[in-house]
Image (cartoon, rainbow, N blue to C red; front, side, top):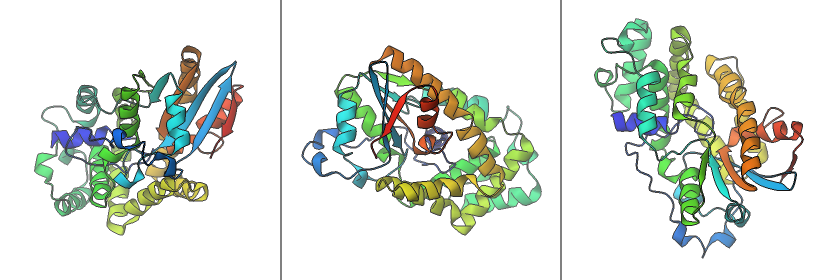
Length: 316
């Protein structure tokens, strides 16, 4: 079970939504880069791709999803050429590294020894949680040391995976393997400790509400619909569909929507823009892959870089 939770944590920010892959295995069976050449020229556009220029330096921003399907690969020629032309690959995290997630999970996702989620939730919420875990083939007795935000994400992630969107087919896996074959260094924008700490910043009341909201969306099918709509729109580079999915995740006045808008996006986007600026000063050409939702809207990373004086062109 710990390996399942570690795998969930590797995807906690997913496409920057609380819908996660819940793969048991932390190993990364990435798409086969060696088989790409034959079919890459026919590959369709996916996600969103930007070119960023400043003082003679060029970088690329590519919107990713952290769980997907084998049919999403290979990525199309503009993406693969941009990566090939870059000096470094930049991702939110190296999702292959399990030790940092183990440490972050202990610090932010678990209660201290002797404590339990049973002491932090109402009886009604506990009953709903046990029902949801039972439907997913899990037991609260084996998970009671974990905090509500983590169990909420675990359950939603398991539902997403049951419907065919898996971590091993996430875009990061493809990019990491391609970069390794090209001997490109990897730069990280964040850390596992930082990412999981964002979820742990919710107090007990917020975490219980976050859990209740996710349980309700699981029961209604809304959790799957939101995530599948975004990933499917990504797979077609469908800008209106992407924007519609984004709006569905940040609207409605729920704790989950507010956390998405203010913390997962509103707090992190300016930090990412500043980090990308620093990386561009060190690497003449960087290929930056971040969760798709970070690239959208007036407070998205591309617009924030424009405000810093960068020339940003959306290729698609």
